[in-house]
Image (cartoon, rainbow, N blue to C red; front, side):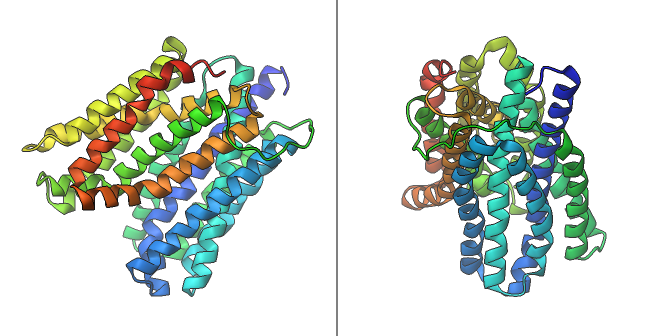
Length: 379
């Protein structure tokens, strides 16, 4: 890392573009899902297994990325992952069979997992040398990319563009962002070959908190609209507004999150974020009116917004593991929460009710206020 201010500014730009490109390409895939499903003729059960391939590809790539980033640096891993996403996105709508789509999704997931871990490691390096909190702002670029990717592809499809054309357009835009970012990424001086290790010490606590945070975010995505319908608060056609408010609130909170972290400290942000999310979850369960629920979804977004950025910063600064391996462990565990969370919510809802299952999320989020003091001292 250089102390040159211009080099540091370039690295900041490269990090923001990497987050933006990754979130953008990932979100471009969402509106293309119905077309890919129809092309291969998969029913819901088979397509659910296909989507699992994406998550499994990511989880398999993440530990390896942490290992290689500790050895050769995050830069080549960001490049491989970012341009891999660019290349694979069109293949998702070209895949002619279930097997080819499964393979493409696994590779897409592996590219996503690679850039996800590597850009968080790179972001932690930039943040450390900048001497101020920056992680929330970087993660805001992911959220912004998600809004632009999903909205842009939806607009292109609505205007009559073919799915392949929309995918190629998304890839071209992401290619441009990665092309600008690549020469500005920090280079690594090399180091001793690290060993594969399990999360330990403070990193284990952070990994558990990441799984909880990601589980709650995944539950809002997969079950939020269904909760609104199950509560009798809105018809299915408009129930997606809850997730929209969640996403907007999260993006706004991340754009201002670095200043909040600098003012309050990471421990207090975790404590307040967890408490706000608990309040939001509670409001989504208020019967009789849609307004408490919509307020609740916005509060969940505000509360959860800066939890993951804070966790990644603390993991990278932990003295218990090498930064690359620590970030990889936290990211992998977080993705496990995303993969298992929707299924666990479904099982709990089947045994009790969807409202009771969401109540369980509030109980899980209590881990943040309870663990904030210890987790905030891990760096």
